[in-house]
Length: 180
Image (cartoon, rainbow, N blue to C red; front, side, top):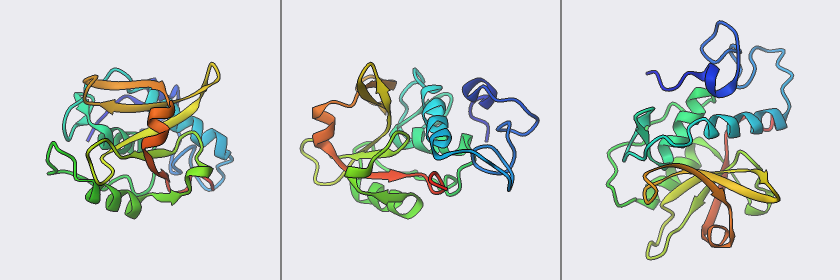
């Protein structure tokens, strides 16, 4: 399945689909990418999707929902375990399933150790279980930001990770291998 042109999003070059080869960041057994490189790459690919419209269960350039943004970002980077599919869920989110899927395919970590490139899981008002996810990004003008596909905005957006979102954060996950 084709999503975005990775050369445009990551400013890469080369003949392989992601411009690097086999490893999920740069390729091959001799990859010298640092953890910071990997986290920056996750942010860059997520930012490359800003403005793409929100679409329930979307997984392509024609639209993504919040988990779709995480999946397409992972797939664009050839990150292991991002080939799972989470489909056939109602428009009203099922947080139990979301949490189970994230826990199965990503690495859960403490809220106190979150870093840019991590996936944040949120609980919203009136819901018992977490129902939304977003990427945490590096500070921008002194503030951390988050990138997510937001139904109310009808597109992928980036904005401050402010107190209202901090208070709703219930879990933090990272892509497998991001710290290798």
